[in-house]
Image 1 (cartoon, rainbow, N blue to C red):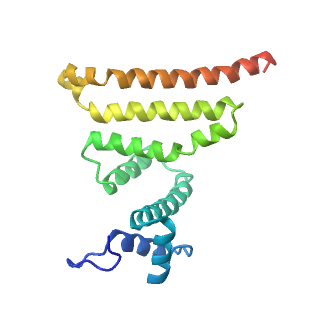
Image 2: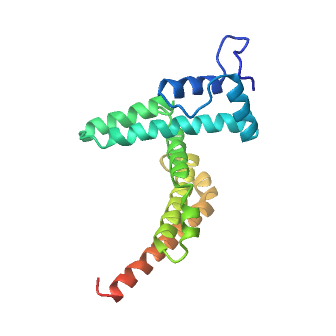
Length: 191
């Protein structure tokens, strides 16, 4: 992937991402070709560089969104904001693509949970959170793959995903069991 302009006159993704990050005033991203080349080398290639820039832009946008989400909004306004997000992600008209977007968001948000659970082996809360996130991701994958199957009476498609549904149930049940461990502990000390 080239970092210079393309023959068709469009900017490559890395350049567009850099422009957006610079527009947001983020200073810890490369300025100039030499810094970009050094970052690419440090990260191990252009794909990793582009992934880093994408994640940096996402982080900056999420920070802004967290601030905006704390503002008082009506339920209707929040729904409209959600619809605008779906339109910007180009998934507004496709329920399966919406489910896939939500699954990706859950996966991205919950990626650190297994590490947190590993660090605090005696704490069932991070473990339960990680298990619940994993179960939700599995359910969302099935939702994307089977969208419309219930309404169409497509039993074969639904049956093909029975194993995944059982896997999700097992994972979510483990999350409940770990939550119950803590509740039992609290009950044992009269809390």
